[in-house]
Image 1 (cartoon, helix red, strand yellow):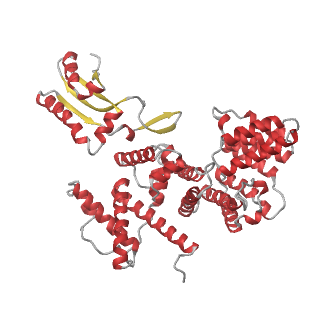
Image 2 (image 1 turned 90 degrees about the horizontal axis):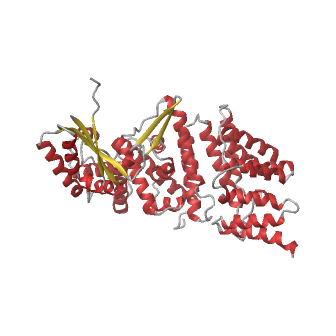
Image 3 (image 1 turned 90 degrees about the vertical axis):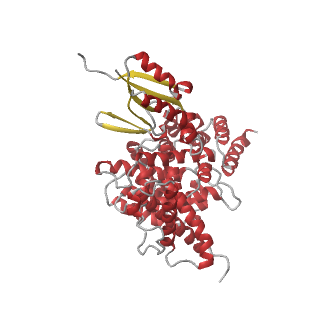
Length: 118
Length: 416
């Protein structure tokens, strides 16, 4: 089963990653985490996202396009990246989510990829 | 010849530096698609010039020299980041040791840079600041003072806006045809925002300099958009306001309201220029809020030729402005003009009290306009004093505070 793990981080943590001095050290636990998933053969793909202040939100109502600076929801925790993993069950996906560095300071959302009705 | 440069010489030097800075930065930022890197490289080039030029003499083409130096700095910075294999860069910078100054003039990409700064994906609240910094080279601390925020907060907002432009690859190209009107409006709005920043602040050298910087941006936009009526309208409006500025304070440094100013102290040259611009804009038959605002300012300058102010024309212009672009400022202006045109302050007061807005009670121009109208109404002196006190508490400008205090004194005197 494929699951998407979305890593939600507090803004301060995202700022730490974006900082040229602190960034490399902040990346270390992530490298280890990603390496572990790759070695286990569960990783299907994923990306780190640019910081939320580079986000733009678009809405279209009645043919009128509205472009707005900023992420869809300006909350305390924001998506900082995601991976797609292929595991046998939700329990296994939750185990991988628990290991994510984001889980200890922010949160990690686990959601299965939708499959067409059989 | 005197050792100290005279005022026009100094102004010319400042204008040349502004011209060069904006042209060089726009060109570098467009080539490199990274405003922050281009700013760093250009700052270093200016610093190098300060040590090299006195020693080696000013180069024949200072702009070309600065561009070459900045390009070299960008290449060095990129090498430092071990990106020298990037093919795009190799095309752009064939040789690092290209010492010859650029033979051709730097192409003018400043309008493109303004379009980038006013892109819909950029927070409208940071667009004016971004233009002041990138097109004019103003530092974040000075911009922060004008926006009444801390230097640190302003630096962060500007850094993030530039990071967004870089990360999202906002193109330094002309906007698509369908987007042009909206994007033009955003550019002019940001310049207007830069100009109005100093309103209500202490009338000091820093605020004067900011007004002049905004005027320069408006000149630039009008020069680069020669067929845009609203760009001409915005420039005309700023010229009218700036023309009257010398008469704002009397010889003792006290505030003089517009209708009591001595027209002989206005800058007639700027008023003439603004009127010519407004007439040229009208030929396009494309009226917009900036042209109407300029027309209102033009009417306020009529006292230069005639003895009186055409208040009914002004009231009519405000009605047109409100139909096109309703704003609290326009509604206040309309109310005051109606009161003047009809000689009935109560009519103006009714219009003022019809405006609704969450922050209206602390909106200084609204409170001051109410006080002004109440003062002209029999039996409302006590209300007028109250409103003037409120208006006084809401202003930061010392000359205006003293002016409001005098109004209060004048109203209270007959009561004792």
